[in-house]
Length: 85
View: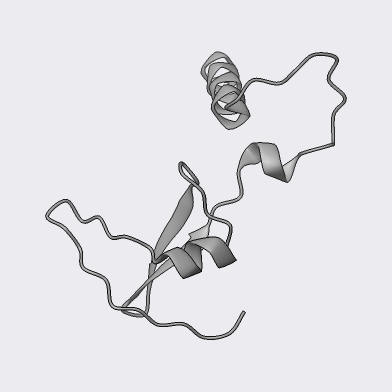
């Protein structure tokens, strides 16, 4: 991928804009989730792999999947966890 460096400005709510060139290289679209880590005095951003992407193609489904599969899967797991505890 190579090395890129940009200076960005943070607003009063802590938001920054990731430069377009980086978003395109990493295929970061609107609504894409990122992991934010703090390590050794640095902030590290990296694309977060969604649950749906992680298990894509593992199951056969006979009907169209909803738009936000991650949200549905998390909801099902939370419901199961509440019953289990």
